[in-house]
Length: 278
Image 1: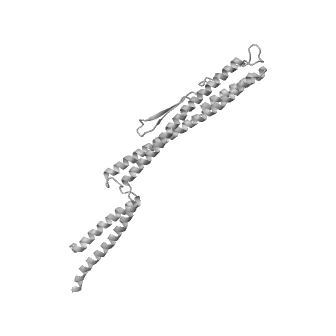
Image 2: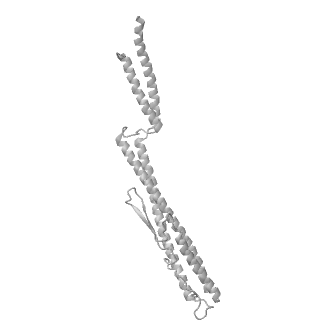
């Protein structure tokens, strides 16, 4: 069967319509996805450059989560330090009361309260963990800042127990005078108060160190957030479509398609005029 032969005018108009239809499909896809470059076939250089930006942004987002966990760990340790400082203050108050106490029973009762508070310090330090890491139990954590892991900060813990802080246990009847049990042993009690003061100073120094660490992590976290946004914006600039421009293109193509259809119709009418000869 012979192929249908079109006139040169009809063939030209049909080819123009096919090109317009293809351009409309591309424009519709851009309007639907918001992307000017959707695959490496559209523009390999910009596509892979944008992919590199997005990949790095994703890696940095993972590091940002790691920084958030580091901050929470420091907060857990700081909560523990604040609690232990309160217990130390309570223990010091008990010891100072013992200095002015009279009678062996009263002094020994205050000594027992002191020992109980010392035990509470151990318990609180043991409970200050976050996701299995406890900076008050000499644990450490490395927080990475960049996607390659080359830059980081190490959160170094310390022994926040009574033993680690140098708060020694009080032996039975240690706060009563060896000669007269009804009189407090001021030397022993003042020595324990001095240990409490030293432990308080140690905790404050550690709290300051953790505060500086938190400030560093927070600064890097803010920087990472800005860097992620910059990378995403860079990827968008390389691949996203200008919706205003694409909308204008669609209107132009629709007009061109309508004109092309009209031209094709006129070309076909020229061919149909031959029929009037018969």
